Image (cartoon, rainbow, N blue to C red; front, side, top):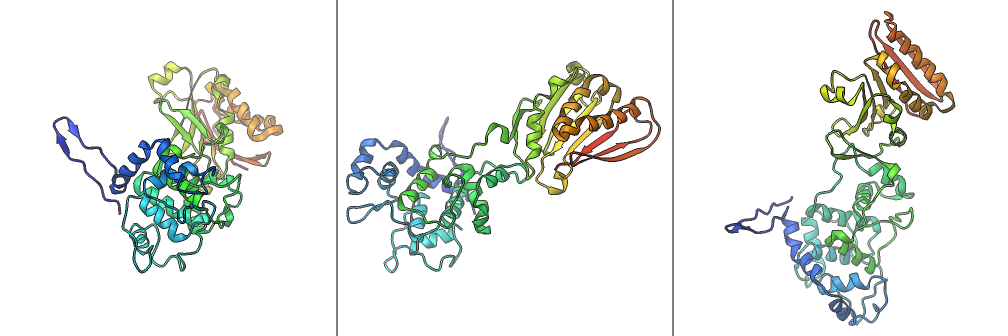
Length: 402
């Protein structure tokens, strides 16, 4: 449970710092001390370790030693030795601002008790605390500790990097189910990541690697969070001016399609408003006679709407693309080239055949056809589903994903 720390006013016009929760408040002195360290201090304490003269982790080990998180023994730090479960728990608990002291019967018991109390681990989760900890176990613990002190940036279950990050981890299937979400979160915020395209969940951590993880826990700036390639997400500026990002659902082709149509307004002779609705998880393209008509009344002056469902729901992802015509004559006159451009992406060498079907329905709508029509047609393996109500000056078209 998170306990809120409510600041009090010290003097008129002066307040104490605001901390989001008890954990953030507790570790603040450690973070301040870390930020104030000079290289001379770090080099000084490292001189006490005979094996840290040129090790890649020397700065991290030196900083953690100075703030009391780690220490060596027998004049060495042994950076390449595997870190034990109890040692990792001690490092984590001390990085959270706890300093319980060591138990006389078993030195790590106090740290284990705090870890259980903070719900980093469950009671008797480990049969042997003296064995080396695995990478996936360490990830679960440090991510839980991190979520006690800061808000995770991707809390939306329907629009987050999980699907994309999962696709980058080639040995994701080898991660235990109870640890998978923690591994994804670790990648996303930059705590523990793999080598190349492998996470190596069952491998052990070294003492040097554990020290680096603790620095990342305490210092956000030392992390390397996951950053997607430009074409792996759909980022746009909504009509209101906010920058929004649509992360790929399990079927990434939807994001590929959205990026392929990024310049769709250039194919229209009218005005196109585009964006991403974070409430409905829809990438949308709304078509108008002109920008003036859009600004006058964006609801009643709309001539055509195209939208892509991006929500993480396989039932919707089988049929994600929808085109709604409200004014077929205006679409024929101003926006037909947009449809053809999209059909080239969806239907490839059968785009002309698909376009002929679209034009057929355009003709029905423009001509005032009174027949109620439904058609299912397949091109390039995709189903097109047309629906027109007799007498309407428009129709709907849904296009399936592959």
